[in-house]
Image (cartoon, rainbow over all chains, first blue to last red; front, side, top):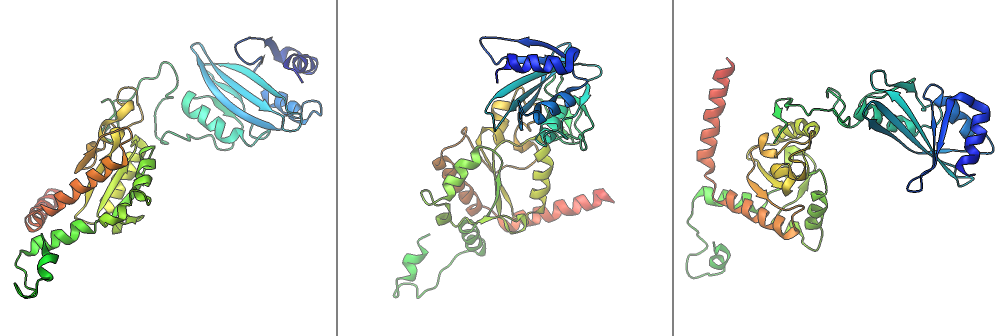
Amino acid sequence: MKPNEIFKELKVHFGEEITELVENPSSDTYISVKPEKIDEICRFLRDNDAFKFDFLTLLSGLDLKEKLGIVYHLYSMELKHRLVLKTEVPKDSPNLPSLVRVWRTADWHEREAFDMFGINFQGHHNLIRILCPYDWEGYPLRKDYKEPEEYHGNRVPY
Amino acid sequence: MGLLNRLNDPIGLDGIIFGTVEDLLNWGRSKSDWYLQFGLACCAIEFMAVNASHFDMMRYGCIPRSSPRQADFVIISGTVTLKMADRLKRVYEQMAEPKYVIAMGSCANSGGPYWEHGYHVLKGVDRILPVDVYVPGCPPRPEALQEGLILLQKKIRMEEIFRKRKRLAEEDLANQMNYK
């Protein structure tokens, strides 16, 4: 199934939640959605017989200066088609529903996005840092991140 | 030393060798230095190549140990992150004296490619451990690591153990006094 067909189908079921279809010759076509009901949209994409997106290939965070972005790459093992979903959350309250209950893959991916960007996935059962130490301060992949002067008595700058 | 040549000579010295205890101990220590494996990044791949049959590290008397208690020296092969720095220090403290450190590769020497923007990297392992031999390269060739190893063995051979032990004992005493 092509992304524009999926977009039409999603528009019928979720209406306002689905914002736009962005076609770009240099990259994947993606569907931009609102963050509030992302878990329901994804569950629908997984369970509907026309889509059968049974595999979350990738979940990544983005820093878009004013907002934080989250990108989902989905793949269907059975129907061999793929889809890119994008959503945005404001930087001062980066909250959106977790997808752990939909795809278990989301578990560590969401922890990484939380670790690097501070995106708060609500409903995640174990949202703690995965790469940085637990007592690390700040979110390193944000554009406005300042590296610390010292960590556990070790000087950080060269 | 030529010890073996003389042992084979039945007429000359009758199997008697003159030397210092320190020489003999150092000779033994330098030829059977077991190392702690501490592979951290891509340098560990080259390090594995040194271990494997082509370069064959064991012919120098180096046997890999997984426990710090049994190791004489540690090869830090790779990027030491700040998260790992605490663990590395702890592992090093568990090793028995005398102990040595080889820093392998640019990252362990100075932070390497992460020296400027690596918010998470310790810029040189010598900030937390006393390093004996630095092996440059990114990653170093196996030959380079072998040279580093031979340099370490030379260093062990030249060491004044008894004087060092005395100095360490004095430092220990001084530390104890400080704690009180």
